[in-house]
Length: 108
Length: 122
Image 1 (cartoon, rainbow over the protein chains, first blue to last red):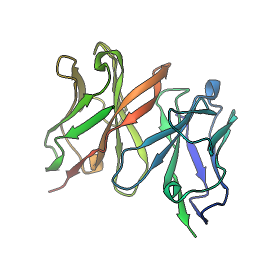
Image 2: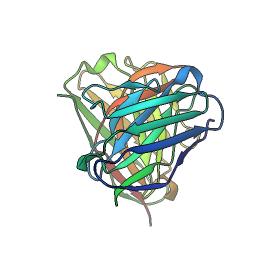
Image 3: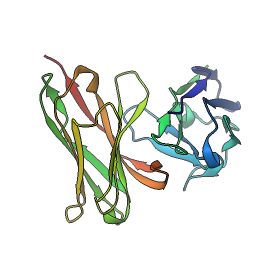
C-alpha cells in the first residue's frame, strides 16, 4: 500500500501568514488522485481539495492544492482564525486508500 | 443539508461484538458508496470498509477482514458496521462517510459524520 508522509508535524504560524503543508507518497499516486481534509476537535472532517488541485464545494480560494507523482502540497494563502486545525492528505489512486499522519497548524 | 449521524459506540470487552449505525439524510442515499473510517486516540485516519450504493459490493481493510461486516438498508437510509471478535487495537472513533468518487476500489469522501467512539477493554 502507498504510505503518505506529511511534513511538518506541527506548523506554528500567525493569522494572515501563509501555510505550506507537504505530503509525500512512497510511490507515484495514479492520476493525481489525492485529497486534503481539515479536522477540528468535535467536528466532522471537511473535504478541502481532490484530484490534487480541485477545491471542494464551498471551500474558500485561500486553500489551494498542487502536485503530482509523489509530491503534493496544500497551501493556505492567508491564515484565518478558523483555519487552525489538523490537516490530512489521502490518496485514492490505489487500493487501499491511505492517509497521511496529519499536520497540525497551530497559532504562534 | 447532508447529515450523517453515527450511533452504537461504547465500551466492549475483548472478543465482544458491537453494531454501529449511520443514519443519512439530505441526499439520495442509494446512489452513493459509503465507507467507515476510524481514528485511534491521538492517531491518524485508517480506512475500514466500503459498500457500493446497491450493497452488492463490499471491501475491507486486511486488519478487519473476517471480523467486521458492512451493510446498508437503503429503505432506511442507514449504513451499518457489525464488529465481531473485537480487539484492543480496534479502539477508535468510527466515522461514516459518503464516497464521492472511486477509482480501482479506492475513493475519496465528500461528507463525514462526527463519529462514534468504540473502546475495547476489559
